[in-house]
Image (cartoon, rainbow, N blue to C red; front, side, top):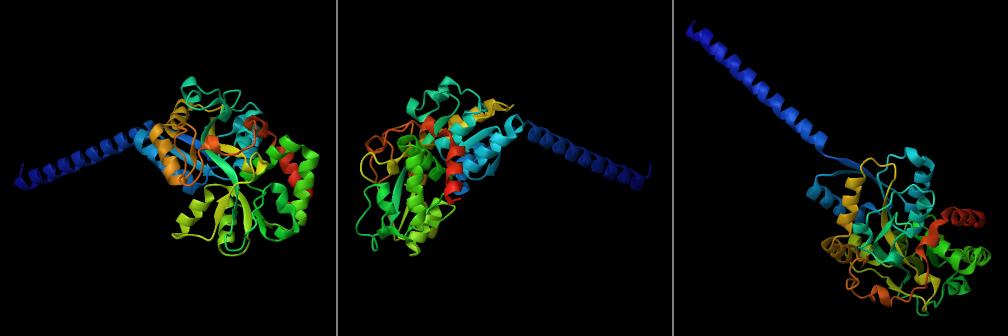
Length: 342
C-alpha cells in the first residue's frame, strides 16, 4: 500500500472513530435525559415568588419541573374540569380554599406521615391530602400620607369616607378565600350585604394584590385588601421604599384571616414519589427560613420564624377559621358574579 493510500485509510479510520465517539456521547446524553424525571406542577404561587425555590429543587435533585402558572382559584377550577385526565402531578396553591375545592372532589392522594408531621393539624387537610407550606395574613395596605383614620373592621370600608378609594382583587384566589371565610362566619345573606355595600362604594378592581399596593403607591387609590407580604414584593420590584404601609383590623375581625399556601399531589399522578420530594423540600428547615427572609411569609414548620416588623404568627389577632371550610369556592364565585364584582 502506498504511503498516500495508507494516510487516507488512517484519516478515514480517525473520522469513523470520531463519529462513533460523538454518537456514543449523544446516546449517553439521551439516556441520561430520559432518566431525569419530569413532574408537572400547577402553580397558583406567582412565578416571581416560587421560581427560585423550584430551580433550587431541580438543581439539587435533578428532577425537572414543568410549571404552569396561574391564579389558584382558576387552576383549581381547571383541575376539577380535567378530573382524572389532568396532566398535573402536583398543585401549589396560594390559599387553602383552592386546595379544599379540589380535595372535596377527591382528586388528591393521601400524603405520608413524614410530610404531615411537619405541620400543625390546623394548617393541613383533615383528610390528610394537602398540607400548608407557608403562612400569610390578610391585612389592609394604605397610604400613610393620605389616610389618618384607620378602619377598625371590614365593615368600616363601606362608609362614604372610602368611596372610590378602596382597591380589591375579586378574581384573585386569596380574596375569594377571604369571602368564603366571611360566608362561613356570617352567612351568605350577610356576606352579600357586605359585598353589595362595598360595590356601591365604587371600589377599584384589580387582578392581583401587588397591583393594589402599586396603585396605593402611585396615588390611584388610598387603601386596599391584600396579603401581608405584597408590601415587600412591590418595594423590592421597584427598588425603593414605597408610599404604603400595612395594618391589621381589630382583634378577631375576619379581615385578619390567616391563610396558608399549600401543596397537594394528584391521585392520578404516576410520579407521586418525585412529587413528595418536592413537598419535603419546601418544608425543609433551611427552605422555610428562606421563605421568611426572601418572600416575607410565615414559616409553618418553625414558629420562631416570622417576617421582620410583624407579630409572630401565634400572636396575629386572626379569627378562628377552619381552613378546610374554605373549600366552597364555586358558591363564593357565584355570589361575586351575582353582585357584579366579577
